[in-house]
Length: 211
Image (cartoon, rainbow, N blue to C red):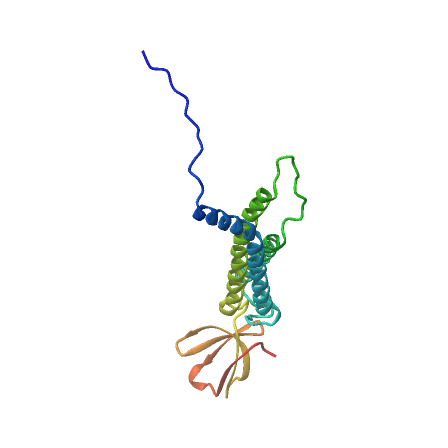
C-alpha cells in the first residue's frame, strides 16, 4: 500500500541581503534602459546605412556603364534583376531600421493586466528583431548593388568593338573582325565581308563605332 502523498510545504525564504537588493536594482535599471538603448542603436545604424547608400548612389562612389543597353542581352537582364533585388532589400532594410528606431506604426492594445514593464519588454524584443533584419537587408542591398555595378564593368558588349584599318590596296576600311585565317583578317563592313592581308596593314586601331 503506497503512503499518501504529502503536499509541498511553502514557507518564506531567507531574508534579502544587501547584495540581493543591489542585484534587483541593477536588473530593474537594465530593463528600464533597454528600450532607449535599442532605439539609439537603431538610429545609429539607420544613419550609417543612409550615408552609405547616399555615397554609393548619389555621389557615384561606385560607377559602371551609364547605359545597360551596351551590355549583351543576358548580362543586361542579370544587371536589371540585381538592381531590382537591391531596391527591394534597400526598401525593406529602411523600413525595418525605422521600425526599430521609432516603433511600429500601430497602437498598443491595452488590457486590465497589461503593465508598462511587460509592454516595454515585448517592444524591446520586436525592436531587436527589426534591427537585425534591417542590418541584414541593408547589407544585402549593398552586395546586390556592387554585384550589379561589377557586372557592368566586366560584362561583354552587346556588339563587338569595331576596328579601323588601312592598306595600300583597299584604302581605309571600318568594320568588325569576324576571324583571322592564313595571315588574312576577315572584316565585316557594310554588310559585306572583306579579307585583308595582315602584312599589308599601314594602320589598325579600335573605334567605338564606324562612321
